[in-house]
Image 1: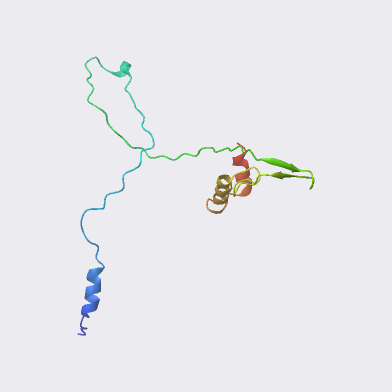
Image 2 (image 1 turned 45 degrees about the vertical axis):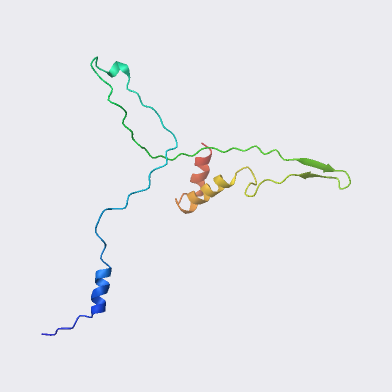
Length: 125
């Protein structure tokens, strides 16, 4: 029978790789953006019903909102040069779509694998 001696360093490495047992670390509390009261309609209550308090429930959701900006650009006219000088838009704003829409379209195309005709169709509705 062939027996090989176990290297103590190897044995210690195996012990070090074991996960420690114990409680899971607690998650960070969710930041509440708004609260909404949900009353029970009185027509649904029997005559002997008594209020016993409030039950809190946290629901996580995400929403997209529009951010349509009207820029008021200063306009000057130089008679000596014969041209108008217009205030520049902030970085990222050129054309009729802002940086948020542009980055969303890039994500839809590359990460969500949506074709350009599909994206074009969804942006017009």
